[in-house]
Length: 393
Image (cartoon, rainbow, N blue to C red; front, side):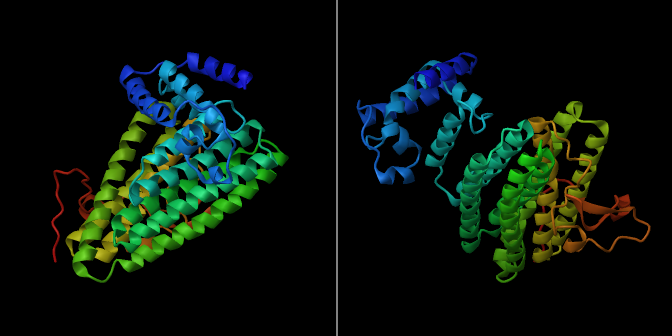
């Protein structure tokens, strides 16, 4: 344990963060240390396996409680920075337990199904990111991949269940937005996993987690289809959900547009052009969905907006993967996730003279994309709050 502490302190010495962040975490940690008492170690009960972060590190019923004053000291002296540094850790790194502990701490403060679904999806993608980094470094083993598989499936299924909870409460726009973003992340990381294996052994182990990704992806795609089919029914509720998903699509496009602009200097010109083209495709779906909403076709508006989010999220995922792994996926796949092409959403009625190209992901041809329509054919593509959508009953 002494050796582990020395390593952690060495890492912590390199970290500096603003005082307000240190103060915020310091108050929180002191509260839990004071509440828990001064004991250092007792027997670990079976139930502790099911406990979260606070029970593990700060309850009296855990052997790991010996770490509570240590963890508190680390935060008091080095602030939240040690947790930030730990975010780049992978299984086997000295700071990886701190990373997992900080994730459990975040879960402790999640109180809604929406926030829970978002967090669990994020953590599921993190486990894939860790597998990619280990595979690229040639550090992946059967034991590590099994642990990541278990954690990935746990987070993914929790996210799926929370999204279903939102759907069952008729919060279809929120559920569809979360589901689309998760689907796009799974598609991008499935492709990344297939490309990062550094040797034959890594490839063998990576294939195991790719199989799990495909399993979850099939469930997520099914959920997307079910939500699209459930939009019909009560017209007022359909209108509300259509308005919500159209707004979410507009927000996503604005977000990704900013990300692409910020990342241009770090992108190959061809990659940047490809990602911009993908975002334009998403804008077309969004604009068509917005027009359908204004025409009172809520089902079509919902479907097109789902597709817009799927497409717009893809450049964001690919830029993040490039930043983390120096792996450029932008020239080998477009943003249209599996079974979500423009033609599936009803955008198959462009003029014969339109510039068309196959839409592929991971080498699979998914459908036919269309070129940019003429100005006279374009629906209003504005995503700003200044151009409010008027809905016709």
